[in-house]
Image (cartoon, rainbow, N blue to C red; front, side, top):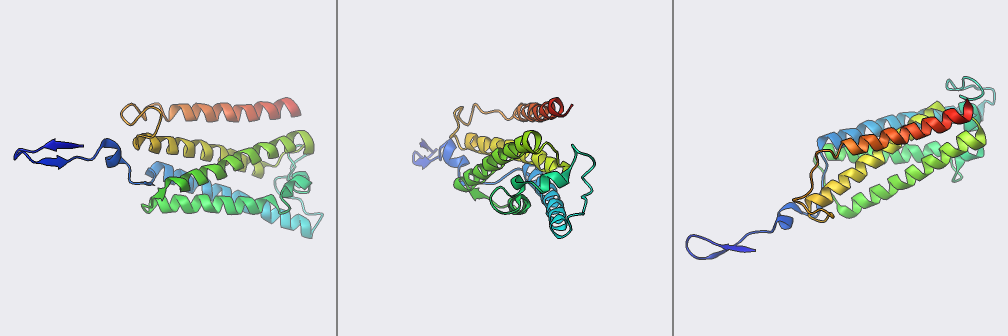
Length: 215
């Protein structure tokens, strides 16, 4: 695109999409901080689960602090075959996954930007995490018939990670003019309310299923 200058010569003016798109996406400070917080919480809880798992393997009489009764029983969950869904203890997956989340969050805080394919790969990993969490929740409630509070914190962390990352990617695509609304029709106002409502309904569904089954 070009326009005529005062001396009559043509000057190139980059299009809106060219101005906004560099091929790399960063992240807002709020989003980066959320990744750091969720990553730290997920790492900490995965570490606790791994510690208790090792203690149970070494001493069958060991009782984790999160084992309170027949329903709130980390022992039953950790001793189930579902606790090693892929042949390795599930906490290993959590330690690796949340380590990645924390690393990305710290990189964004330092000003790093990543190509779109990186973000799509990150989102794909979170989709897997969401599906895995739902499978684990189903197994805990309906098959194992016991709940692990540490595990439930991990479930609670995964959901907002997925929602905020999906929102982040949609926002970046809109800014690049690749979204369905176009860059000039996208408004971020209200874009934080809907994800919050989705999370509230999502959490409520988990709570209702748990209460209706165990009460």
